[in-house]
Structures are given as C-alpha cells and as structure tokens.
Amino acid sequence: MPSDIDPTISSTLYGKDLAQCIENFPPFNNTPVTYTQPPNPGWKFGQRVEETEEGKKWVQGEKEGWRRIDVDKESTTAIYQLMLSGIQPRPIAFVSSVSESGVENVAPFSFFNAVTADPPLISYCANTFGGSRFKDSAENATKEFTVNIISVPWAEQANFASVDVPSDLSEWELAGLTKMKSTYVKAPRVKESAFSMECELYHAFEIVRPQTKQITGTVIYGLIKCIHVRNDVLMDAKALEESGHRAKIVADPGKLRTIARMGDISYGYVSEPFRLPRCSWKKDGEAVKDAVEGYRTEKGLPEKEHTEVPKL
Ligand SMILES: Cc1cc2nc3c(=O)[nH]c(=O)nc-3n(C[C@H](O)[C@H](O)[C@H](O)COP(=O)(O)O)c2cc1C
Image (tube, rainbow, N blue to C red; front, side, top):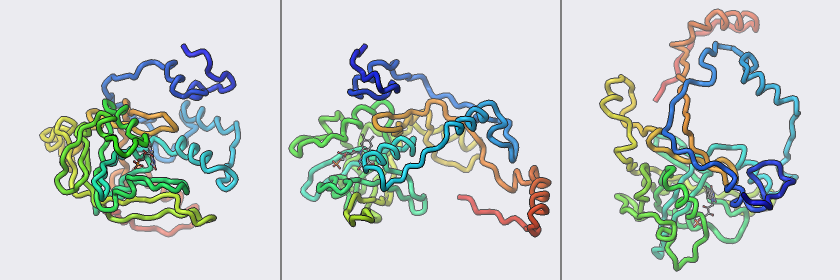
C-alpha cells in the first residue's frame, strides 16, 4: 500500500500521485453485463422524486446548499476539470487520421457525440485552449478520418494514444494497436475496435474565446460514410426480427462493452444498464387524461387535440 498519499485530501481518488492512488482499488470487475429494472419501476405520472426512499435521500442532499461557479472568475483548468467531472459519462471517439505528408495519428476525444442520424453525423472537439500548437487530429481531419469506439479490453492502449509521441515514432505501434485499411477514406481504422465509422469532413468550426478572440479549439463534424461493426457484438438478427421491433442492426451494449470518460483519469464501464420504456402520448396519455383535464381547467387552458411527433 502506498504510504505517502496526501492525508489532507479525503477522497481516495486524489493524491499527489494519481497513478499511485490506483493501487488502493480492487481489480477491474470483468463480470458480464446484467440488465436490470429501472430505479423506480412503479413510477406513476406526476409522482415526485421524494416519494421513494432513494429519491428522498437524493433531495435531502440539497440541505448542504448550492455553490455557484461563475466561469469568468475561475481558471480555464478549473472549469475544464469541473466540466469533465460533471458532464459525464462521455462517449469517447478514438480518431485515426493521416496528415497531408502521410503521418498517421490516433488519439482519444471525449468532447464527442453523435449529432444526428440524418445525415449520419458525429462531432468532436480538439481543444488547444489558446495554445499555439493545433492538434494533429484537427489538422489532419481536414478531409477524412475514422472514429473508432473503444471497448474494455483495449482501454489501456487507447488511453496511451493520448500522449504526444515524437513524430518519428508510430503511435499505433507504441500503443499496441493494429491498422486496418478503410474502404472510403485514407485514414486506417482500428482493428481492435468492434465499431468503427469512416468519416469525411462535413464542417470544421473554430471555437473562439469571446473575451480575447483567441482560437481555443476546433469542432470537427464528420459525415459517416460507412460503419464497420463486428458480427459478434451484434444482437441476434433473427431474434430481433421475431421480436417485431423495428430495429434491424443493433449493437448489444453487453457485448460491445464500451468505455466512457468520467472525470480526470476516471473511466466508466456500464455493467448494469437498466431498461426504461419510452412513454408516448398515444399509449400512455389515457392514463393521465383526468390529471390533464384537471390541469387545463385549473390553468384556464382550452381543450386541445394532441398531434403526434413523427418518430424515426
Ligand atoms: C480519454 C481521453 C479523452 C480526451 N478527450 C479529448 C478531447 O475531447 N479534446 C481534446 O482536445 N483532447 C482530448 N484528449 C487529449 C488528446 O487525446 C491528446 O491531446 C492527444 O495527444 C491529441 O492528439 P493529437 O495532437 O495527436 O491529435 C483526451 C485524452 C483522453 C485520454
């Protein structure tokens, strides 16, 4: 057990040496994914959070009061760390790109998400925070790149790829990852990824700090040309068809085992996803009809026909 973890820091997560703190934790739990019921399966329309034991405890946390953080009064680092820890879990794009001169690059980006499915778009942001060097993954991605989803078995390799390797060395080899030829783009995809997207640049948007007008990052929007998905992480097509569900090709989270970013050096792995059916006015509206009518009368709102929102 390490002896020199700063005793003034009460959290076991933080110490002078973050890597050393890890030694205190139990090993990674590789147990298979278990789907569970939602937190409050008996929830009824309008039921308030404090009406369950867990909800009551949650709401009582408010007794400690609130703290307002005005972003202009804090350093960029402080705000960055706060956003990293509060906006989570975040999916991670493992971006592979090739420079004009042929230098290959791979790096993880957690300021990443799907933008829309029509057209199929993703975005990620390469931050520089006003520093002079632009990230290779932003510069190289001017035309095309691949975005690879990271699974538990290659978390360490992906994490390593965020280092700024000297340009004469191969990040791929040092990280221990394998290149696979893409179909439509020059940048290779990652063989170890069970879900990779070949993308071409849709739009690059420079982020400017309003006060200083300095460029602090580039948001890259990628138009997905094709998705490569390993058959062994897909849900059984026959079972899907027999279920009558409209989904045709679906990755099974229990098999894909993606990792997420949770804070500074914290990663997450969802081993217990819960299932919570979506409500629809058509299906569930009847159950709240009386409540809705009462609400309309109380507020003096006119009767109104409900128009359904088209679903994809
Ligand atoms: C899990 C993880 C997520 C990251 N997310 C981002 C991000 O969203 N934006 C960013 O600019 N850097 C991010 N980084 C840091 C980059 O990966 C790192 O700066 C990398 O060296 C950039 O590579 P490049 O300069 O070769 O493009 C992240 C690092 C890790 C480990």
